[in-house]
Length: 226
Length: 226
DNA sequence: GTCTATATGACGATAGAC
DNA sequence: GTCTATCGTCATATAGAC
Image (cartoon, each protein chain N blue to C red):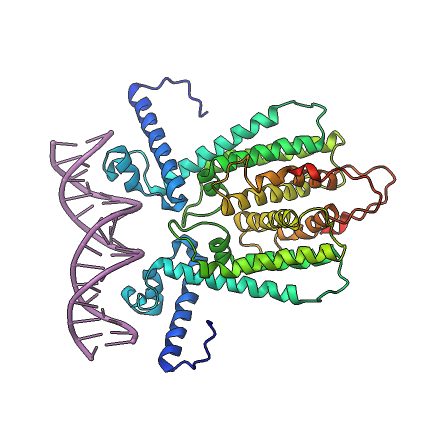
């Protein structure tokens, strides 16, 4: 649908290039001033044009935010799909698999902080992402659910707990790492970050907690969580 | 120092009342429009005065944010001190104690979302809280460290892992719950929230992971976390 | 078709009258 | 302590040059 086979003429190609340039510059500004610090005038200033000219490409500032949201969501989805596709059905433990997934997510978040804040928090008053911009995030969530189900079906995660519940706790864990790192140590790299370094230990804790119980082991109930 | 014994005269008392009214209204606006959506003009409008009149009480919009930050941090500290002081040295398990602490923190965060966003995230471009405004948060962090150390000294948490490391993982867990709830389900109450309801299970996982190991149990290493 | 020039109304902030 | 008047900047809209 969106991948139209019709070749783009010069004008359309030039227009797309300009749109990309606007988005690149907007991303720079958000990185410097904070997500809510983006201003249309500043984008125009850096491009050497007047603010009204930008309205040829984006009908409003929120439309610009929406394009940035869509771009960020696609970037994150692409980054995670690398991991989803890696070592398919390999004899990887739940812990190793979850570690790959969690680190990829946290790494992208730390290395794309402006996108992260726009995607995960609500920093811009009045801006709500459109359904189209949000679509890659929905797809990513579905892929992540499937990863949990896969691990359950391979007997690497307990299957007497709904995948949704495991995923909820998993997202809490990773969101916590990202939230703490971005809030308290945004200048630390992923490799050096105090909070990103906690991921292996946390994943080990998580994988142990949701491991398939050994047969005939009397376990403390997981039922009364609700 | 700050609790001056000098009685306030009428003028000073009236001034403080006005300051409190400004802060109350500002909090309302942040709740409706988002933290970055606060505007000096809107505060003045709701008070029935002109915007310049507010500059008698706050020299800038960021000073207003700073007062709100300080107020929020004091409110959170007070809420948590209720829990710190409760059942002192009681024969409470680590899990029960951590559950009380985590739920109190998350409850306050969910029930004071505007403060939470201001305190935990960075939604206002150019605003950095002053040292004085930040002080209650520093004190809260120190209290929380002491809670971990207490549990270690009472033999309820393993003491072969630095309290700082345990606290880091603990803050990640609670920050994750709060972050997910505020981002994805801000309208759900603490009691009904999909993410706040995950706290008991997560605390059980956490308390088990950091429980004092039974004697002569060969355990998977906690050392190679660094 | 894409830009410039220009205008409107809101914002944060300041100066000075009362 | 509150006001009016004012400034510079912002997002946004429109008219018209090329």
